[in-house]
Image 1 (cartoon, rainbow, N blue to C red):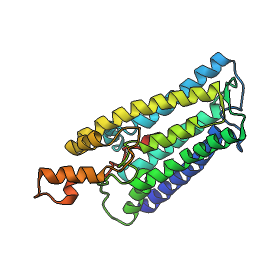
Image 2 (image 1 turned 90 degrees about the vertical axis):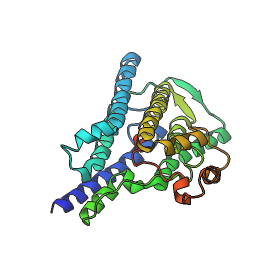
Image 3 (image 1 turned 30 degrees about the horizontal axis):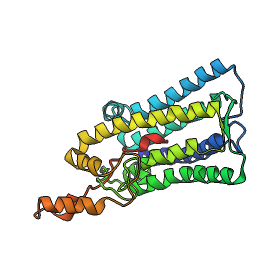
Length: 278
């Protein structure tokens, strides 16, 4: 019964994530849903700015603090290990829901793309950004990232094992493709208001800071393997060609006795990019 309850809980958290993600896309894109980044309860600009910054800071703190290894080591003393990731997903969704519900628009227009070509170009990039985020998560194990693998393994009585270190596409071209997707989702918009600009700037700054913290944790966890990965793969600006061949050649030149699998980076650790969403 406990295993079934945990699995049901994990599925519920995952479905809530899907709904929250879809609503967030509409919220940022300013269409379909009743409350968007440019519509909703009005407030004086100073109050609106203070409220919005507080909401963004709350999101950033929850998203990063709960993902840190030190926090998880203590957190799992209260929350059972199989549902730790699902609980993280649940908390992220609740913070995002609060952000969207209490957001106060600042409707001063910063730029407006009036041409049809420019409008379609912006919306195409916007769509690419929102599609890129889930597609990139699939490359590194989507269901592990959102807690489903953990509750499934617990349901069938199998021990959970951490993901191996690999660098599949697009991680063999850029170290943080999730953040590139989020940046497109936040910035590629035909009409940019002051409130939306505050949203985009704050979350972009958060992503840059979060990337630094994540990489510190990954270096501590993987050591020389991740250092080699950092040396060969750029952080935010993608390479024109994948890096796997260059990394393999370099590793083989160091020791012919090593197997090919030990010469190539093996994967992205499970919480490498969990924090952008999401």
